[in-house]
Length: 230
Image (tube, rainbow, N blue to C red; front, side, top):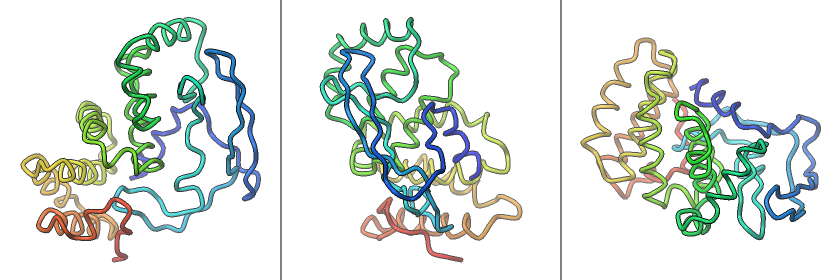
């Protein structure tokens, strides 16, 4: 579980913990030079509870999304080098980019990173994971997004620390259930449920996922549902 959270540190824009009051932040788009402002919450607090998406409940659940240029929609998920910017400009001329601007900004950022990044980087996975947590309306309802997440998640399983692997497997199983692929979900749940010294949160999470698998109308099929305390 801790690994799922800390892997997001590969993203370039951590928000400093200063206060709970929203602040206005000015950004300049590196392609086109457009300047825009966005609201950020500098200090986030959490309640210790989690949703079915494994997003932590707190004051910043859907705040502090990666900034996105208003005119050309470029997601500013990291500081691009000069060479990367050259590749970004090239990619933005492709139909692949243009056809994705109406999807989650995190999916668009993922496509950009796949084009300009390194094959073994965790940034693509981290972007998709953060999008499931911070942009649920545009990620969980998009099968293309979820397919991309399962592709990236499957590819990095061997890099997940053993103590965090059961949570990772359970979340991946939940995504497969949302994709109506129980044949891929149930083996993952079975493996996750065999974890020694499982935390109560993991046990409650697996139980909730199984309820969703058995009943598509279950409230536990909603990624925003809070995992019951155990």
